[in-house]
Picture 1 (spheres, one colour):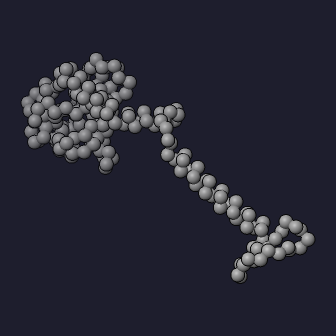
Picture 2: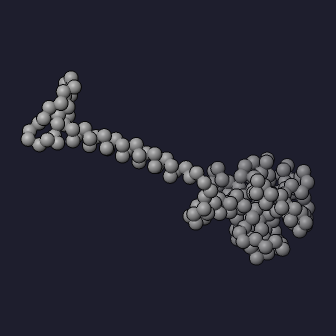
Picture 3: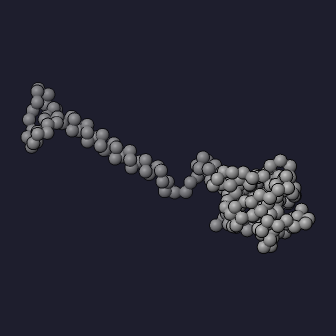
Length: 195
């Protein structure tokens, strides 16, 4: 490699080697640009993966939103037959559903994977649990009649009773869960949340 003075400026040198020629200022400029890119890439990856606990208000809001989304969902372990407000049969396939209040005495089950909603007949219920956001529960009262309960803030709620085999019992509206059963199901769900 040869070094030679180019022109009258003592800071401008030419590095000549083989067939490549580059003045020292271009060489230094490329070096600094390369170092900046490496530094920027390192800083970006460090920002993408925080090393400590998440404590910013924005992060906490996202975590609360995710928690709320889990609280208002139920996972059906097998297909469940429900009754629509028009007294027809509708089947919710096994999967996870967001549970929402609909018109009076109606509940919406929104399939998370397909984003399809079905409206089912529901009973208006009351509860004594102090909650700030809706909480959905899936309770298998026995092997024949599963319940989906939506507890709402203010002591109100909805409950729908389904069946695994498509049969409808007489007096289905009389099969409401007891407050003790609802409380037990709520405790079970909250324990799962804290795990």
